[in-house]
Image 1 (spheres, one colour):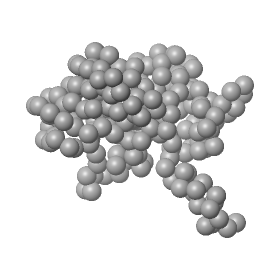
Image 2 (spheres, rainbow, N blue to C red):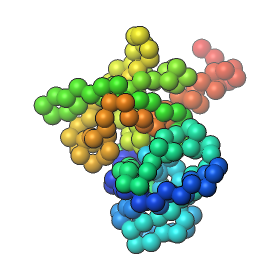
Image 3 (cartoon, one colour):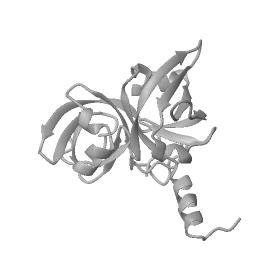
Length: 203
């Protein structure tokens, strides 16, 4: 379980193609501090299992399912990635419930700068549109964000507003229009939908 509060921006230093999987090696001295084999670290919002940790790097295997559902297959040597360790029970819960299970990807449509923040607008996959509401939560490349606006003209899209800290301390600050990002919708919305579909909740 994660909070969506990025601990550091790491760097991919190795990508080994294994046919139906990829082995990533990532440099991140903050998240590898005390890391052990089998620990969980979210890479751009995807929960991965640590193998072969060193003082400042870790390796993780990315299976076909994760490659098909996320943007991790786009990573190359030198790619910058958002990193977060699994939360501790004593951690302040500053973001929202993030599982590290990516629901899909989206492209950045445009960015609108302001004096102290920027508004980023993303295409929204039709299958995920029903889970987003204004002022609700969305995870973009592992970053917990608040939805500013949701619309469907001419195609579904949503926007988020990034404060200076988020712009400086995550990969979203340098994201270019057209770039692909990982999305995880609020898991609570999915549970509510499931309960309603099964008739467990009555209006």
